[in-house]
Length: 360
Ligand code: PLP
Image 1: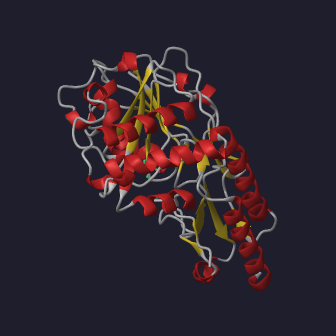
Image 2: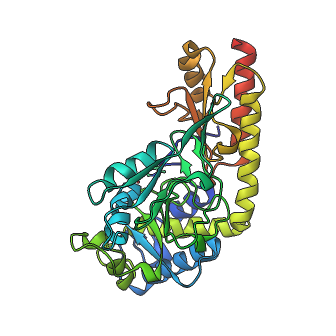
Image 3: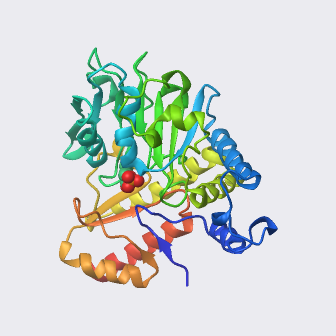
């Protein structure tokens, strides 16, 4: 029986990729060992690493003036990595707060600078929303601007493309990278933990404009230093090789699906289907303004919260796993990253309609 995993992360990987990894697990490339066991400096792994980077660059159309770094440390590692690398001699940076993860980035940044926090949270027609970018008040002396385009917990997304002239824009794309086309040239740095749309946890991707290298703070740990990582082809220390290999398989799978444009269209269909069922009656509710609804993480509440437990038990029994909402928000949340097929969302919406018929 088919199981669909709606976890916010670590999240579902494409079934084809897992199958290939399973087949190759003990005997990779006929070497009689696992990819986990070979040297990251050997020619076999170097080829995997280079191909993964090339495919990632192709998928996002990353200009040659940008470095791609394969790092340890997760999204939270980069909450420190961004200020430690990009503050230079400045003492402040603009931080847009539109949700849980943006606020977490601010908290970490306070260790290194005095962030200018732009509170972008607003209410529109009684629904949670984000101020449009043109209303963000940037400060004159900020080293950079930081924001999070997809708030994994709140289910809030900022769909606009930044256009702030010379300001250096940095963004936490942990939960939406590769889910839609992206104009990398609008950013100074982009980062994303791998465990949602890329591969297993343990790997973090950073895309950084080359001219921003060389400004890290003296206290920046070498493993977070973009210049050190770039000079060492992301192999200053032993990289998370298995995660890097799996990410490479996911990138090849994405290319086979038609790339990021194709994913964007499927992701749109998936999100529209789920929101349409939520909006159809008062039985379910999502309290995010339509313009800021996430296509990756969709929180929803049952009007009668005393049914939450039953909903979760019955959905789990139906093969629909990990639908419990984050403890901060409550209710339910369906994370529908690239690896979630349309059939998975159909199975969920069929279940939701059936549950409503029986319990509404
Ligand atoms: N940023 C976003 C948008 C996230 O969703 C998460 C985790 O879910 C993080 C940062 C933190 O990532 P990590 O657990 O890899 O440090």
